[in-house]
Image (cartoon, rainbow, N blue to C red; front, top):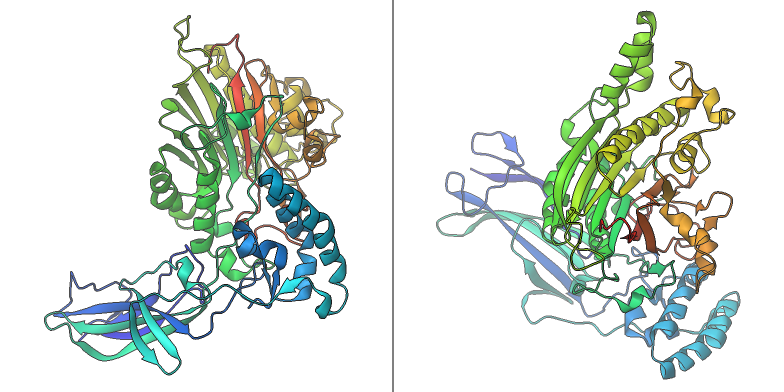
Length: 602
Protein backbone atom coordinates (compact mmCIF):
# COMPACT_ATOMS: atom_id res chain seq x y z
CA UNK A 1 0.00 0.00 0.00
CA UNK A 2 1.03 3.63 -0.49
CA UNK A 3 2.71 5.15 2.57
CA UNK A 4 4.46 8.41 3.53
CA UNK A 5 8.10 8.02 4.56
CA UNK A 6 9.10 11.62 5.24
CA UNK A 7 8.05 15.23 4.68
CA UNK A 8 10.05 18.43 5.04
CA UNK A 9 10.23 21.99 3.73
CA UNK A 10 13.30 23.39 1.94
CA UNK A 11 12.86 26.54 4.05
CA UNK A 12 11.05 26.63 7.39
CA UNK A 13 10.53 30.40 7.15
CA UNK A 14 7.37 31.18 5.16
CA UNK A 15 7.08 34.57 3.44
CA UNK A 16 3.94 36.26 2.18
CA UNK A 17 3.58 35.76 -1.57
CA UNK A 18 6.23 33.02 -1.82
CA UNK A 19 4.94 29.55 -2.64
CA UNK A 20 5.73 26.76 -0.15
CA UNK A 21 6.36 23.37 -1.76
CA UNK A 22 6.98 20.53 0.72
CA UNK A 23 9.24 17.62 -0.12
CA UNK A 24 7.19 14.43 0.29
CA UNK A 25 8.90 11.05 0.05
CA UNK A 26 6.53 8.10 -0.33
CA UNK A 27 6.86 4.33 -0.55
CA UNK A 28 4.87 3.00 -3.48
CA UNK A 29 3.06 -0.38 -3.49
CA UNK A 30 6.01 -1.86 -5.42
CA UNK A 31 8.23 -0.94 -2.42
CA UNK A 32 10.14 1.70 -4.39
CA UNK A 33 10.59 5.19 -2.94
CA UNK A 34 9.57 8.24 -4.95
CA UNK A 35 8.74 11.93 -4.65
CA UNK A 36 6.06 11.89 -7.36
CA UNK A 37 2.70 13.30 -6.34
CA UNK A 38 -0.28 10.91 -6.08
CA UNK A 39 -3.32 13.20 -6.37
CA UNK A 40 -6.93 12.21 -5.86
CA UNK A 41 -7.50 12.55 -9.61
CA UNK A 42 -4.89 9.84 -10.31
CA UNK A 43 -4.89 7.40 -7.37
CA UNK A 44 -2.36 4.59 -7.13
CA UNK A 45 -3.97 1.18 -6.54
CA UNK A 46 -6.92 2.86 -4.87
CA UNK A 47 -5.05 5.33 -2.66
CA UNK A 48 -3.98 8.95 -2.95
CA UNK A 49 -2.20 11.63 -0.89
CA UNK A 50 -4.41 14.14 0.89
CA UNK A 51 -2.86 17.49 1.84
CA UNK A 52 -3.97 20.18 4.26
CA UNK A 53 -2.48 23.50 5.35
CA UNK A 54 -3.54 25.14 8.61
CA UNK A 55 -2.90 28.49 10.20
CA UNK A 56 -2.11 28.01 13.90
CA UNK A 57 -3.82 30.87 15.71
CA UNK A 58 -3.49 31.67 19.37
CA UNK A 59 -5.07 34.34 21.50
CA UNK A 60 -2.01 36.51 21.08
CA UNK A 61 -1.03 38.10 17.75
CA UNK A 62 2.72 38.39 17.15
CA UNK A 63 4.03 41.46 15.32
CA UNK A 64 7.11 41.08 13.13
CA UNK A 65 10.13 43.40 13.00
CA UNK A 66 10.25 45.29 9.68
CA UNK A 67 14.06 45.12 9.55
CA UNK A 68 14.65 41.60 10.87
CA UNK A 69 11.49 39.74 9.83
CA UNK A 70 12.49 36.59 11.68
CA UNK A 71 12.36 38.52 14.98
CA UNK A 72 9.36 39.57 17.04
CA UNK A 73 8.77 43.33 17.22
CA UNK A 74 8.88 45.05 20.61
CA UNK A 75 8.92 48.72 19.48
CA UNK A 76 6.85 50.82 17.09
CA UNK A 77 7.61 54.22 15.60
CA UNK A 78 4.77 56.57 16.62
CA UNK A 79 5.16 58.71 13.49
CA UNK A 80 4.72 55.69 11.19
CA UNK A 81 1.95 54.14 13.30
CA UNK A 82 -0.32 57.10 12.42
CA UNK A 83 0.14 56.69 8.66
CA UNK A 84 -1.39 53.58 7.16
CA UNK A 85 1.14 53.22 4.35
CA UNK A 86 4.04 53.22 6.85
CA UNK A 87 2.58 50.87 9.49
CA UNK A 88 4.29 47.73 8.07
CA UNK A 89 7.65 49.51 8.36
CA UNK A 90 7.00 50.91 11.83
CA UNK A 91 7.97 47.84 13.87
CA UNK A 92 11.45 47.12 15.29
CA UNK A 93 12.77 44.34 17.48
CA UNK A 94 15.24 46.36 19.61
CA UNK A 95 16.33 49.98 20.12
CA UNK A 96 19.59 49.14 18.33
CA UNK A 97 17.59 47.84 15.39
CA UNK A 98 15.85 51.20 15.11
CA UNK A 99 19.10 53.14 15.55
CA UNK A 100 20.89 51.18 12.84
CA UNK A 101 17.96 51.61 10.45
CA UNK A 102 17.44 55.31 11.18
CA UNK A 103 19.10 56.74 8.06
CA UNK A 104 16.88 54.56 5.89
CA UNK A 105 13.83 54.98 8.11
CA UNK A 106 14.08 58.78 8.10
CA UNK A 107 13.60 58.84 4.33
CA UNK A 108 10.20 57.18 4.85
CA UNK A 109 9.16 60.13 6.99
CA UNK A 110 10.43 62.61 4.42
CA UNK A 111 8.66 60.90 1.54
CA UNK A 112 5.43 60.63 3.50
CA UNK A 113 5.58 64.36 4.15
CA UNK A 114 6.24 65.13 0.49
CA UNK A 115 3.35 62.99 -0.73
CA UNK A 116 0.64 64.33 1.63
CA UNK A 117 -1.53 67.39 1.05
CA UNK A 118 -0.42 70.85 2.11
CA UNK A 119 -2.14 70.87 5.52
CA UNK A 120 -0.84 67.44 6.43
CA UNK A 121 2.58 68.39 5.07
CA UNK A 122 2.85 71.11 7.69
CA UNK A 123 2.02 68.69 10.47
CA UNK A 124 4.38 66.01 9.16
CA UNK A 125 7.11 68.55 8.64
CA UNK A 126 6.93 69.61 12.27
CA UNK A 127 7.03 66.00 13.40
CA UNK A 128 9.90 65.19 11.09
CA UNK A 129 12.03 68.14 12.04
CA UNK A 130 11.36 68.02 15.75
CA UNK A 131 9.86 64.71 16.84
CA UNK A 132 11.92 62.59 14.47
CA UNK A 133 15.11 64.44 15.28
CA UNK A 134 14.45 63.97 18.98
CA UNK A 135 13.74 60.34 18.30
CA UNK A 136 17.07 59.78 16.62
CA UNK A 137 18.91 61.54 19.42
CA UNK A 138 17.00 59.92 22.27
CA UNK A 139 17.78 56.41 21.15
CA UNK A 140 21.17 56.65 22.78
CA UNK A 141 19.46 57.24 26.13
CA UNK A 142 17.27 55.02 28.27
CA UNK A 143 14.41 53.06 26.79
CA UNK A 144 11.89 55.12 28.75
CA UNK A 145 12.77 58.16 26.65
CA UNK A 146 11.96 56.50 23.32
CA UNK A 147 9.19 58.02 21.22
CA UNK A 148 7.72 54.59 20.49
CA UNK A 149 4.69 52.47 21.29
CA UNK A 150 4.51 48.79 22.18
CA UNK A 151 1.00 48.15 20.88
CA UNK A 152 0.54 46.25 17.62
CA UNK A 153 -2.43 45.99 15.27
CA UNK A 154 -5.53 44.13 16.39
CA UNK A 155 -5.55 40.48 15.29
CA UNK A 156 -7.87 39.35 12.52
CA UNK A 157 -9.49 35.93 12.83
CA UNK A 158 -11.37 34.34 9.90
CA UNK A 159 -14.58 32.49 10.59
CA UNK A 160 -13.63 29.13 9.03
CA UNK A 161 -12.29 27.61 12.26
CA UNK A 162 -11.85 23.87 11.92
CA UNK A 163 -10.04 22.63 15.01
CA UNK A 164 -9.28 23.78 18.54
CA UNK A 165 -6.50 22.50 20.74
CA UNK A 166 -6.17 24.13 24.15
CA UNK A 167 -5.44 27.82 23.59
CA UNK A 168 -4.74 27.31 19.87
CA UNK A 169 -7.05 27.27 16.89
CA UNK A 170 -6.29 25.56 13.57
CA UNK A 171 -7.78 27.34 10.57
CA UNK A 172 -7.68 25.41 7.31
CA UNK A 173 -6.14 27.64 4.63
CA UNK A 174 -5.22 25.19 1.86
CA UNK A 175 -6.01 21.74 0.51
CA UNK A 176 -3.23 21.40 -2.09
CA UNK A 177 0.36 20.26 -1.78
CA UNK A 178 1.61 23.82 -2.24
CA UNK A 179 0.52 26.92 -0.37
CA UNK A 180 1.28 30.60 -0.79
CA UNK A 181 1.05 32.56 2.49
CA UNK A 182 -1.14 35.65 2.52
CA UNK A 183 -1.16 38.78 4.68
CA UNK A 184 -3.57 37.21 7.17
CA UNK A 185 -0.92 34.58 7.95
CA UNK A 186 1.69 37.09 9.16
CA UNK A 187 2.85 36.31 12.68
CA UNK A 188 1.30 32.84 12.68
CA UNK A 189 2.82 29.37 12.41
CA UNK A 190 1.62 27.20 9.52
CA UNK A 191 1.01 23.48 9.80
CA UNK A 192 1.32 21.15 6.82
CA UNK A 193 -0.37 17.76 6.93
CA UNK A 194 0.03 14.85 4.50
CA UNK A 195 -1.82 11.54 4.83
CA UNK A 196 -2.75 8.55 2.67
CA UNK A 197 -6.49 8.32 1.91
CA UNK A 198 -8.74 5.73 0.30
CA UNK A 199 -9.86 6.92 -3.13
CA UNK A 200 -13.28 5.33 -2.81
CA UNK A 201 -14.26 6.03 0.80
CA UNK A 202 -12.03 9.14 1.31
CA UNK A 203 -11.14 7.66 4.71
CA UNK A 204 -7.62 8.48 5.90
CA UNK A 205 -5.26 5.58 6.48
CA UNK A 206 -2.90 5.82 9.45
CA UNK A 207 -1.52 8.91 11.13
CA UNK A 208 -0.82 12.11 9.18
CA UNK A 209 2.76 13.30 8.67
CA UNK A 210 3.02 16.95 9.73
CA UNK A 211 5.41 19.91 9.69
CA UNK A 212 5.25 23.15 11.64
CA UNK A 213 6.84 26.20 10.04
CA UNK A 214 8.27 29.28 11.69
CA UNK A 215 6.00 32.30 11.92
CA UNK A 216 5.00 33.79 8.57
CA UNK A 217 6.87 36.99 7.81
CA UNK A 218 5.87 39.80 5.43
CA UNK A 219 7.75 40.13 2.17
CA UNK A 220 10.26 42.97 2.71
CA UNK A 221 9.35 45.94 0.54
CA UNK A 222 12.08 48.43 -0.36
CA UNK A 223 11.25 52.07 -0.83
CA UNK A 224 10.10 52.52 -4.44
CA UNK A 225 12.59 54.04 -6.85
CA UNK A 226 11.21 57.00 -8.79
CA UNK A 227 11.68 58.10 -12.38
CA UNK A 228 13.57 61.41 -12.40
CA UNK A 229 13.24 63.90 -15.31
CA UNK A 230 16.63 65.00 -16.62
CA UNK A 231 15.75 67.28 -19.55
CA UNK A 232 13.48 69.75 -17.79
CA UNK A 233 10.25 68.10 -18.96
CA UNK A 234 7.49 67.47 -16.45
CA UNK A 235 7.08 63.74 -17.07
CA UNK A 236 5.06 63.43 -13.87
CA UNK A 237 2.18 65.02 -15.77
CA UNK A 238 2.03 62.20 -18.31
CA UNK A 239 0.60 58.88 -17.14
CA UNK A 240 -0.48 56.10 -19.49
CA UNK A 241 -3.50 53.86 -18.88
CA UNK A 242 -1.40 51.55 -16.66
CA UNK A 243 -0.25 54.46 -14.51
CA UNK A 244 3.26 54.49 -15.98
CA UNK A 245 5.16 57.77 -15.92
CA UNK A 246 5.71 58.41 -19.58
CA UNK A 247 5.45 61.26 -22.06
CA UNK A 248 3.91 60.83 -25.49
CA UNK A 249 6.19 59.27 -28.07
CA UNK A 250 8.76 58.09 -25.53
CA UNK A 251 9.66 54.57 -24.40
CA UNK A 252 11.43 53.05 -21.41
CA UNK A 253 14.24 50.48 -21.32
CA UNK A 254 15.24 48.41 -18.28
CA UNK A 255 18.56 46.56 -17.85
CA UNK A 256 19.01 44.21 -14.91
CA UNK A 257 21.35 41.35 -13.97
CA UNK A 258 19.03 39.29 -11.78
CA UNK A 259 21.72 36.93 -10.31
CA UNK A 260 21.04 33.37 -11.41
CA UNK A 261 20.14 30.77 -8.82
CA UNK A 262 23.28 28.76 -9.60
CA UNK A 263 25.39 31.83 -8.79
CA UNK A 264 23.54 32.72 -5.58
CA UNK A 265 25.51 30.48 -3.24
CA UNK A 266 25.47 30.86 0.52
CA UNK A 267 29.28 30.78 0.46
CA UNK A 268 29.44 33.94 -1.67
CA UNK A 269 26.54 35.70 0.03
CA UNK A 270 26.71 34.45 3.60
CA UNK A 271 25.48 37.84 4.84
CA UNK A 272 22.10 37.34 3.15
CA UNK A 273 19.57 35.36 5.22
CA UNK A 274 19.12 31.87 3.72
CA UNK A 275 15.39 32.37 3.23
CA UNK A 276 16.05 35.59 1.28
CA UNK A 277 18.67 33.83 -0.86
CA UNK A 278 16.41 30.91 -1.74
CA UNK A 279 15.12 30.86 -5.30
CA UNK A 280 11.40 30.55 -4.40
CA UNK A 281 11.69 33.85 -2.52
CA UNK A 282 13.99 35.63 -4.96
CA UNK A 283 11.96 34.75 -8.05
CA UNK A 284 8.81 36.26 -6.55
CA UNK A 285 10.65 39.36 -5.38
CA UNK A 286 12.39 39.81 -8.74
CA UNK A 287 9.16 39.39 -10.70
CA UNK A 288 7.41 41.86 -8.44
CA UNK A 289 10.21 44.40 -8.98
CA UNK A 290 10.52 43.89 -12.75
CA UNK A 291 6.78 44.04 -13.40
CA UNK A 292 6.52 47.09 -11.16
CA UNK A 293 8.85 49.11 -13.38
CA UNK A 294 6.43 48.62 -16.34
CA UNK A 295 9.26 49.15 -18.83
CA UNK A 296 8.52 48.92 -22.55
CA UNK A 297 11.73 46.95 -23.18
CA UNK A 298 13.31 44.72 -20.52
CA UNK A 299 16.87 43.38 -20.85
CA UNK A 300 17.76 40.76 -18.24
CA UNK A 301 21.07 38.99 -17.71
CA UNK A 302 21.84 35.76 -15.82
CA UNK A 303 18.48 34.23 -16.66
CA UNK A 304 18.75 30.45 -16.41
CA UNK A 305 17.29 28.55 -19.35
CA UNK A 306 14.78 26.64 -17.23
CA UNK A 307 13.75 29.78 -15.36
CA UNK A 308 13.20 31.65 -18.63
CA UNK A 309 10.89 29.00 -20.07
CA UNK A 310 9.10 28.06 -16.85
CA UNK A 311 8.88 31.40 -15.02
CA UNK A 312 9.92 34.64 -16.70
CA UNK A 313 8.49 34.14 -20.20
CA UNK A 314 5.05 32.92 -19.05
CA UNK A 315 4.78 35.37 -16.15
CA UNK A 316 5.78 38.43 -18.18
CA UNK A 317 3.51 37.31 -21.02
CA UNK A 318 0.62 37.80 -18.59
CA UNK A 319 1.65 41.45 -18.42
CA UNK A 320 1.72 41.94 -22.17
CA UNK A 321 5.35 41.12 -22.98
CA UNK A 322 6.82 39.03 -25.79
CA UNK A 323 10.03 37.21 -24.88
CA UNK A 324 13.28 36.47 -26.73
CA UNK A 325 16.20 34.52 -25.29
CA UNK A 326 19.78 33.53 -25.98
CA UNK A 327 21.43 30.99 -23.70
CA UNK A 328 25.16 31.04 -23.14
CA UNK A 329 27.05 28.43 -25.09
CA UNK A 330 28.20 25.48 -22.98
CA UNK A 331 31.64 24.60 -24.27
CA UNK A 332 33.20 25.65 -20.96
CA UNK A 333 30.31 25.19 -18.56
CA UNK A 334 29.36 21.68 -17.56
CA UNK A 335 26.26 20.08 -16.08
CA UNK A 336 22.63 20.42 -17.08
CA UNK A 337 22.08 22.87 -19.94
CA UNK A 338 18.80 23.93 -18.33
CA UNK A 339 20.76 25.60 -15.51
CA UNK A 340 23.02 27.57 -17.88
CA UNK A 341 22.07 31.24 -17.90
CA UNK A 342 21.75 33.70 -20.73
CA UNK A 343 20.24 37.01 -21.81
CA UNK A 344 16.50 37.57 -22.11
CA UNK A 345 14.88 40.54 -23.85
CA UNK A 346 11.18 41.31 -23.40
CA UNK A 347 9.10 43.98 -25.10
CA UNK A 348 5.52 45.12 -24.69
CA UNK A 349 3.41 43.88 -27.58
CA UNK A 350 1.25 47.00 -27.52
CA UNK A 351 4.33 49.20 -27.99
CA UNK A 352 6.60 47.20 -30.31
CA UNK A 353 6.59 44.35 -32.78
CA UNK A 354 9.48 41.99 -33.44
CA UNK A 355 11.39 42.49 -36.70
CA UNK A 356 14.65 40.56 -36.39
CA UNK A 357 16.84 38.74 -33.87
CA UNK A 358 20.63 38.28 -34.01
CA UNK A 359 22.50 35.87 -31.76
CA UNK A 360 26.12 36.76 -31.02
CA UNK A 361 28.26 33.86 -29.78
CA UNK A 362 31.71 35.06 -28.80
CA UNK A 363 32.94 31.45 -28.92
CA UNK A 364 32.34 31.38 -32.68
CA UNK A 365 34.10 34.70 -33.07
CA UNK A 366 37.02 33.30 -31.05
CA UNK A 367 37.28 30.32 -33.39
CA UNK A 368 37.31 32.59 -36.44
CA UNK A 369 39.91 34.85 -34.84
CA UNK A 370 42.29 32.03 -33.94
CA UNK A 371 41.92 30.45 -37.41
CA UNK A 372 42.85 33.75 -39.03
CA UNK A 373 45.53 35.18 -36.74
CA UNK A 374 46.96 32.63 -34.31
CA UNK A 375 49.79 30.24 -35.30
CA UNK A 376 48.85 26.57 -35.20
CA UNK A 377 51.10 25.88 -32.22
CA UNK A 378 49.31 28.54 -30.13
CA UNK A 379 45.70 27.86 -31.15
CA UNK A 380 44.87 25.58 -28.25
CA UNK A 381 46.12 28.10 -25.68
CA UNK A 382 44.36 30.92 -27.53
CA UNK A 383 41.02 29.14 -27.52
CA UNK A 384 41.41 28.28 -23.84
CA UNK A 385 41.76 31.99 -23.14
CA UNK A 386 39.08 33.30 -25.51
CA UNK A 387 36.32 30.69 -25.28
CA UNK A 388 34.23 31.76 -22.26
CA UNK A 389 30.66 31.02 -23.42
CA UNK A 390 29.56 34.67 -23.29
CA UNK A 391 26.90 35.87 -25.71
CA UNK A 392 24.87 38.87 -26.80
CA UNK A 393 21.28 39.10 -27.97
CA UNK A 394 20.46 41.79 -30.53
CA UNK A 395 16.82 42.55 -31.32
CA UNK A 396 15.39 44.91 -33.93
CA UNK A 397 11.93 46.19 -32.99
CA UNK A 398 9.35 48.27 -34.83
CA UNK A 399 7.66 50.94 -32.74
CA UNK A 400 3.88 51.22 -32.74
CA UNK A 401 4.03 54.86 -31.64
CA UNK A 402 5.75 58.02 -32.84
CA UNK A 403 6.54 61.66 -32.24
CA UNK A 404 3.96 62.50 -34.87
CA UNK A 405 0.60 60.82 -35.57
CA UNK A 406 2.00 59.65 -38.89
CA UNK A 407 5.49 59.54 -40.32
CA UNK A 408 5.48 61.67 -43.51
CA UNK A 409 8.41 59.70 -44.91
CA UNK A 410 6.51 56.43 -44.61
CA UNK A 411 9.59 54.76 -43.14
CA UNK A 412 9.29 52.04 -40.53
CA UNK A 413 10.02 53.24 -37.03
CA UNK A 414 12.76 50.87 -35.87
CA UNK A 415 15.07 50.60 -32.87
CA UNK A 416 17.89 48.14 -32.24
CA UNK A 417 18.45 46.80 -28.70
CA UNK A 418 21.58 44.83 -27.76
CA UNK A 419 21.62 42.87 -24.50
CA UNK A 420 24.90 41.32 -23.35
CA UNK A 421 26.80 39.83 -20.42
CA UNK A 422 30.56 40.20 -20.84
CA UNK A 423 33.11 37.83 -19.30
CA UNK A 424 33.44 38.18 -15.54
CA UNK A 425 37.13 37.26 -14.99
CA UNK A 426 38.90 40.46 -14.01
CA UNK A 427 42.37 39.28 -15.09
CA UNK A 428 41.21 38.74 -18.71
CA UNK A 429 41.22 42.42 -19.66
CA UNK A 430 42.06 41.56 -23.26
CA UNK A 431 39.12 39.16 -23.54
CA UNK A 432 36.67 41.72 -22.16
CA UNK A 433 37.85 44.38 -24.60
CA UNK A 434 37.81 41.93 -27.52
CA UNK A 435 34.25 40.85 -26.71
CA UNK A 436 33.02 44.45 -26.53
CA UNK A 437 34.85 45.34 -29.76
CA UNK A 438 33.35 42.31 -31.49
CA UNK A 439 29.84 43.32 -30.41
CA UNK A 440 30.33 46.90 -31.57
CA UNK A 441 31.53 45.77 -35.00
CA UNK A 442 28.39 43.68 -35.33
CA UNK A 443 26.22 46.64 -34.39
CA UNK A 444 28.06 48.82 -36.91
CA UNK A 445 27.02 46.41 -39.67
CA UNK A 446 23.40 46.73 -38.62
CA UNK A 447 23.70 50.52 -38.47
CA UNK A 448 25.20 50.56 -41.98
CA UNK A 449 22.18 48.73 -43.38
CA UNK A 450 19.58 50.98 -41.75
CA UNK A 451 19.45 54.42 -40.17
CA UNK A 452 18.35 53.08 -36.80
CA UNK A 453 18.59 54.24 -33.17
CA UNK A 454 20.60 51.85 -31.03
CA UNK A 455 20.67 50.83 -27.38
CA UNK A 456 23.43 48.70 -25.85
CA UNK A 457 22.48 47.30 -22.44
CA UNK A 458 23.93 44.79 -20.06
CA UNK A 459 26.41 43.72 -17.44
CA UNK A 460 29.79 44.52 -18.98
CA UNK A 461 31.79 43.40 -15.92
CA UNK A 462 34.05 46.37 -16.43
CA UNK A 463 34.38 49.59 -14.44
CA UNK A 464 34.11 53.16 -15.76
CA UNK A 465 37.35 54.30 -17.32
CA UNK A 466 38.44 50.78 -18.26
CA UNK A 467 39.41 50.07 -21.86
CA UNK A 468 36.02 48.49 -22.78
CA UNK A 469 34.13 51.41 -21.23
CA UNK A 470 36.41 53.91 -22.94
CA UNK A 471 35.90 52.20 -26.30
CA UNK A 472 32.13 52.31 -25.87
CA UNK A 473 31.83 56.01 -24.99
CA UNK A 474 34.87 57.48 -26.79
CA UNK A 475 34.88 55.33 -29.92
CA UNK A 476 38.56 54.48 -29.43
CA UNK A 477 41.16 53.50 -26.83
CA UNK A 478 44.33 55.46 -26.23
CA UNK A 479 47.36 53.25 -27.06
CA UNK A 480 48.78 54.11 -23.66
CA UNK A 481 45.77 52.80 -21.72
CA UNK A 482 47.06 50.42 -19.00
CA UNK A 483 44.50 47.73 -19.88
CA UNK A 484 46.19 47.24 -23.25
CA UNK A 485 49.30 45.91 -21.51
CA UNK A 486 47.41 42.65 -20.96
CA UNK A 487 47.42 41.09 -24.44
CA UNK A 488 49.37 37.79 -24.49
CA UNK A 489 47.82 36.72 -27.81
CA UNK A 490 48.32 40.09 -29.53
CA UNK A 491 44.64 40.07 -30.50
CA UNK A 492 44.32 43.80 -29.73
CA UNK A 493 47.05 44.88 -32.14
CA UNK A 494 47.34 47.20 -33.88
CA UNK A 495 45.65 49.36 -31.26
CA UNK A 496 44.43 51.67 -34.02
CA UNK A 497 41.83 49.04 -34.97
CA UNK A 498 40.11 49.45 -31.60
CA UNK A 499 37.55 51.95 -32.87
CA UNK A 500 33.90 52.19 -33.83
CA UNK A 501 31.70 54.87 -35.39
CA UNK A 502 28.60 54.60 -33.21
CA UNK A 503 28.00 57.82 -31.21
CA UNK A 504 27.31 55.98 -27.95
CA UNK A 505 26.66 57.79 -24.68
CA UNK A 506 25.89 56.34 -21.27
CA UNK A 507 22.30 57.15 -20.28
CA UNK A 508 23.11 57.81 -16.63
CA UNK A 509 25.67 60.45 -17.54
CA UNK A 510 22.60 62.64 -18.24
CA UNK A 511 22.42 63.36 -14.52
CA UNK A 512 25.62 65.38 -15.02
CA UNK A 513 25.54 66.45 -18.67
CA UNK A 514 22.06 67.99 -18.63
CA UNK A 515 22.95 70.89 -16.37
CA UNK A 516 21.78 71.42 -12.83
CA UNK A 517 18.04 70.93 -13.31
CA UNK A 518 15.41 71.15 -10.60
CA UNK A 519 15.99 68.53 -7.92
CA UNK A 520 18.89 66.84 -9.74
CA UNK A 521 21.56 67.74 -7.19
CA UNK A 522 20.72 64.87 -4.82
CA UNK A 523 20.90 62.42 -7.74
CA UNK A 524 24.18 63.90 -8.92
CA UNK A 525 25.68 62.96 -5.56
CA UNK A 526 25.20 59.32 -6.58
CA UNK A 527 27.33 59.84 -9.69
CA UNK A 528 31.13 59.67 -9.95
CA UNK A 529 31.92 63.07 -11.45
CA UNK A 530 35.21 61.77 -12.84
CA UNK A 531 33.46 59.26 -15.09
CA UNK A 532 29.84 60.52 -15.11
CA UNK A 533 28.70 57.01 -14.19
CA UNK A 534 26.83 55.72 -11.09
CA UNK A 535 28.93 55.21 -7.97
CA UNK A 536 27.76 51.61 -7.99
CA UNK A 537 25.43 49.22 -9.77
CA UNK A 538 26.88 46.17 -8.01
CA UNK A 539 27.17 46.08 -4.22
CA UNK A 540 28.49 43.06 -2.33
CA UNK A 541 30.78 42.64 0.65
CA UNK A 542 33.69 42.07 -1.75
CA UNK A 543 32.97 44.67 -4.44
CA UNK A 544 31.19 48.00 -4.73
CA UNK A 545 31.31 49.59 -8.15
CA UNK A 546 29.68 49.95 -11.56
CA UNK A 547 29.48 47.11 -14.08
CA UNK A 548 26.06 47.77 -15.64
CA UNK A 549 25.22 50.34 -18.30
CA UNK A 550 22.63 51.51 -20.80
CA UNK A 551 24.33 53.12 -23.80
CA UNK A 552 22.44 54.88 -26.61
CA UNK A 553 23.25 56.56 -29.92
CA UNK A 554 23.15 60.26 -29.12
CA UNK A 555 22.47 61.36 -32.71
CA UNK A 556 19.15 59.52 -32.75
CA UNK A 557 17.96 59.36 -29.14
CA UNK A 558 17.68 61.68 -26.17
CA UNK A 559 17.17 60.81 -22.50
CA UNK A 560 13.94 62.06 -20.95
CA UNK A 561 14.22 60.56 -17.47
CA UNK A 562 16.14 58.01 -15.40
CA UNK A 563 15.29 55.63 -12.58
CA UNK A 564 16.86 57.04 -9.44
CA UNK A 565 19.98 55.30 -8.17
CA UNK A 566 20.37 53.71 -4.77
CA UNK A 567 22.66 55.22 -2.16
CA UNK A 568 23.15 54.86 1.57
CA UNK A 569 19.51 55.89 2.04
CA UNK A 570 18.32 53.18 -0.33
CA UNK A 571 20.31 50.47 1.42
CA UNK A 572 20.12 49.89 5.14
CA UNK A 573 23.22 50.42 7.23
CA UNK A 574 25.88 47.77 6.57
CA UNK A 575 23.70 46.10 3.92
CA UNK A 576 25.21 44.42 0.88
CA UNK A 577 23.35 42.86 -2.02
CA UNK A 578 21.49 40.60 -2.36
CA UNK A 579 19.31 41.36 0.65
CA UNK A 580 15.74 40.65 1.72
CA UNK A 581 14.64 43.88 0.00
CA UNK A 582 16.72 43.57 -3.21
CA UNK A 583 17.11 40.05 -4.62
CA UNK A 584 20.12 40.56 -6.88
CA UNK A 585 23.69 41.69 -6.26
CA UNK A 586 23.08 44.26 -9.02
CA UNK A 587 20.59 47.12 -9.15
CA UNK A 588 18.22 47.70 -12.06
CA UNK A 589 18.85 50.58 -14.46
CA UNK A 590 15.99 52.19 -16.38
CA UNK A 591 15.92 55.07 -18.83
CA UNK A 592 13.16 56.79 -20.75
CA UNK A 593 14.12 57.77 -24.31
CA UNK A 594 12.69 59.83 -27.13
CA UNK A 595 13.90 59.70 -30.70
CA UNK A 596 15.40 62.88 -32.04
CA UNK A 597 12.86 64.71 -34.22
CA UNK A 598 15.06 64.60 -37.31
CA UNK A 599 15.25 60.82 -37.30
CA UNK A 600 11.48 60.21 -37.27
CA UNK A 601 12.20 56.77 -35.92
CA UNK A 602 10.17 56.49 -32.69
